[in-house]
Length: 349
Image (spheres, rainbow, N blue to C red):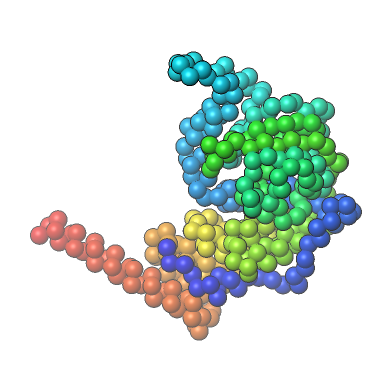
């Protein structure tokens, strides 16, 4: 795929001044809680960003991979050296929990008590074993706040937070993760404070939280981390999508920024969908037109790419990035046409 020039893709829409997120888990819940992951309500283009592309392709496209993960959690008994045919007893279905996006399977080792589970702003005391260095979760006992802190910005943070959202107090679980099937990980939720569901927040609170996520996403993008930025933009969008239509104008900016991340992550189909959301509200949004043109070119839809790029140049004839991209599309189209002509000559020659 032709990657768009970094100068244009990186020209993020930042009408609000950047601000550092507070990392004190004991602040007022209204100012510190972050966006809870709700995969069942997520648009397709956002949901795919919750896990790495390699992870998603292995599990979502191959359901048998999830079955292998579950099978890996069933063999706790040690076989004797001479026994090769003996199979472990299958676990009851209630002892296994499958993450909806297929990223991991959780086996409950010790059941928790009560009905409540961690929510937005819950301060959780957890015990972790087996997680790799750099996962954002220290080995041993630690306290983390749901929706707050740098620990949740990477792929591991996403997995840990999704697991904690499914746990009850006192529960100990073993995780079998699709990207690391040979290494089970242990997580114990000793206690947690009361939190809130996102639907309990006022509209002003949701907009404030979305603004924080957008600011953090732009910081990560500028630091060369489009994957982390995309997660922030996705969390902000999921929160704003719960507001009554037409929703705040912030959604347009977030979709445009998300498209820039998706292009850099090699996801042109998702980038085109994000640009569609922008152009539904603002048909002349130049950045969205340019980014959709780049995405369509990467998908091989040269006519659609040409149309979008020409629209950009009609409004901004000196847009160098659009000029260069259109030139590449024209050359690509000529090569395609030449190949078709050659094939026809062979067929009828």
